[in-house]
Structure formats: structure tokens, C-alpha cells
Length: 64
Image (cartoon, rainbow, N blue to C red; front, top):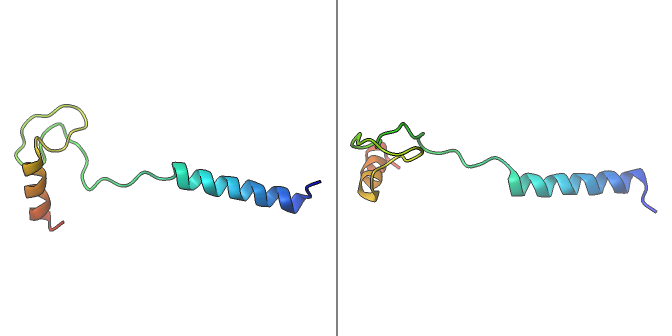
């Protein structure tokens, strides 16, 4: 039979596992604005660059 300390320990372990699995999402280096962050070409929802070359150029200029 589990005592209060065992139940608390189990609860903390479950919370820790859930925090690692569903914790904070990584912070994006830049938010989508509706246009390419490099050449300002209009884009669809949630996109930040129109192609990989623009992303690379943007990152180089920012020093990433």
C-alpha cells in the first residue's frame, strides 16, 4: 500500500515526464509576417521565407 510520500513522488515523476514531453515549444528566431523576411515577397500563412536561399541569406545577415 502506498503512503503519501510514494503518491507525491509518483505524481512529481508524472508531471516531470509530461513537462519534458509537452513543455515549452522552441522559440522561433523570427515570427511570420505574411511576407518573406528577406525579400518581402507575399507568402501564405505561417511562412517566413519564400525559399531556402532567402532563409540562408537572412540568417547570414543576422549573424546566425
